[in-house]
Amino acid sequence: MTPGFDPAAATAAYLATISPAAHAKALAYTHGGYWLLLWDAVASVAAAWIVLRTGVLVRLRARLEQRRPRPFLVVFAVLAVFLLADFVLELPWNAYAHWWRERQYGMTSQALGGWLTEQAVGLGVGLVMLTVLMEALYLLIRRAPRSWWLWGTGVTAIFILGVFVLQPLYIEPLYNTYRPAPPGPVRDAVVQIAVASHIPPDKIYVYNGSKQSNRYTANAAGLFGTARIAMSDTMFREGVDVAEVKAVVGHEVGHYVMQHALRDSALLAALALVGFVLTDRLFPWVARVAGAQGVRGIADPAGYPVLVILVAVLGLLATPLVNAITRAAESEADTYSLQHVNEPDGFARALMKTVAYRAATPGPLEEAIFYNHPSVGSRLRKAMDWKAAHPAPPSAPPAASAAPAG
Image: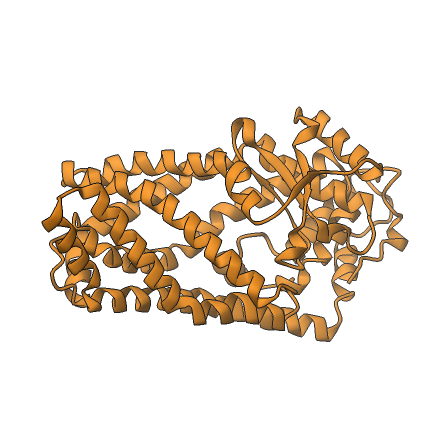
C-alpha cells in the first residue's frame, strides 16, 4: 500500500485539470458522435435505397446474363457499380461527418485533398475485400439456399481472420509509413516491455498518424507472425514522457499477449451468424418495402442494396453489444499494463490526452451503450486504485507532483 495516498482524491485531481471550456468541447464532440451513429446508418440506407430504386443493378445483371451467364462476373460488376454509386451519394455526408467536423474540433489537420485521396484508396481496398467475401457468400446462397447462413458464418470467420493477418502487411501501409522505434530511452523501455512479454522487439513501430488525426493513440494489429504494435507520432509531439509511452505500449502488448484479435474474430463471427439468420428471414420483407423491383431474391446480386440496408440497421442495433465486446478487451489490456508495467501515473497522463475526443465522465447507461473503451474517469480510478495498492517504481513521479497534461 502507498501510505497516505487517496485514489478517489487523486482521480478527482486529474479530472480537475480539465478546464470548463475543454470539458464542454469534449461533451459536445462526444454527444455529437452519438448522433453520427444514427445519421451514418440513415445515409447508408438512403444511398442503398436510391441505387435500388434506379434499377441500374437489375439492368446490369440482366445484360451480363444475356451475354454470358457467369455468376462471379455478375457479382463483381454489381459490387463495383454499387460501391461507386454509394461512394458518390454518401460523399457529401462523409466529408462533413468525418473530415469537416473533425477539423472543426481540432481532431485533424488533414487537407481535403488528402482526405479524398484516402477515401479513393479505401474504395479500391473495399472493392477487393468485399468481392472476396461476397463471391463466397453468393456462391453459398446459390448452392445451399436453406443453410447458407451457417456455412456463411464459417466463411466470414475465415475472412475476418484473413483481414487481421493481412491488415498490417498490405492495408495499413497504404495509408501510413511504419518505421521501427528510433534508438534511445523510449525504444529501450519499449524493448524491455516486449521482451518481458515474449514479443519480438522488431514488432514495435512508430507511424505518421498525425497525417490523419491529432489524437494521442496507439494500436495493436495483425495475427500470428504479422502481429505488431504501432504508436502514432502524436504521442511524441509535445516531448517524450517515457512513463506514458511505457503505459500505453503495455496496454497494446496486453492485446497482443491475450490474443484479443482471435477472441474478437470469434465473437464477430457469432454476431455474423445472428445477422445472417435475420437477413435470411427479413430479406423478402425489406425488398418489398424498399420497392426492389426486378430483384429475384436473396441469391440475386442485384439485391445487394437490400443487404446493405439490413446490415446498416442491424449494425446500428448491435452497437451496444459490439461496444461491450471491445470495452471488455480494453479493460483487460489496461489491467495488463498496470500489472506488467506498473506506471499508473504515466497511464493517467496518457488518458488525460484523450479527453478531447472522449468525454471523461459519462453516465453508466451512456457508457454501456456508446463507449467502446471504458470511460477516462473509470480508467483513471482503476490506475489510482492500483497505485494505492502497489509501490511506485522509481520512474513514476511522486503523488504531489503528478500534474497531468491537459
